[in-house]
Length: 398
Image (cartoon, rainbow, N blue to C red):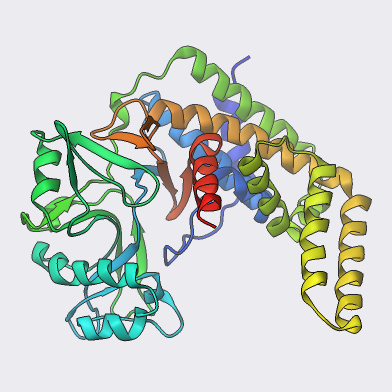
């Protein structure tokens, strides 16, 4: 049975959503909002997914814009400083209480000398990003720097982080990447007269605001939703999962959301653990994983008094989790159905791309997408594929 429009409209009336985010520091998986933000988080996740669902059916984007999420690194903030007009580059530390702003190579060395890889990328951004004459302050992923683009047969490729991006050497992007000293995927603009007052403007970036320059390869994060084939079977499945998510929401008392929020960090850590290991989610697994985390803290401290304090914290926390076992069921059922709907949408949006994507020579989907509803962005990523690959890659480097 399809989830009826009237029911969606009625549901929309009793959910409020959090205000927009001023700075882009961290992206949540869309389904994880229900874990850390309770009822409001569920409302935001549901409406974001439903808007993308409708957009793919040609019904308009609603209040949600969707962009491409690139697997670039590092993230760079750049442009004209709002207070002195000078060109600058910065890492995400631009938004720290004491921001690290770089106008020169010497600034970069002083602020980031402990991280040579970051230093080289920021220097490339400082040397070349000004050539596109940004009209304000922007945030981008650095996709490639000097020497990163390789020719491999009849294609060019680069690997900024986990995914290798490739395109035919004679294609528009292939030629641009091969010539450039810097590759940028710009995804966010900031507006404001001071750094403290700047607010993120999420959504489609107008590349006409940048001057074209052969030294800078611009990779658009804008995404055309009209080019995908969204099958009737997939539409029905998304309707089903949204309906089930709402049913669980309506049957979940407020105190159950509150219990989940108290343990949100531990719960999300455990979910990531199951993705890394391939384990199935279970309450018993959560308790075991959380107990092991506390035990590590106990083992690290040396005095008996410190060990006793940590042991008491562990005992109280595990007791609270077990005492309220049923409180986690509703939110986790919502999480499961929202994730299932998101995965179908992510698969559909991944059908077409200007780039090929590989990890260690194996073809994969793009990293994912970012859906921005009311100024609040969320990740649409296939966690079973990309997140698992990312976790395992990081584990192999340890």
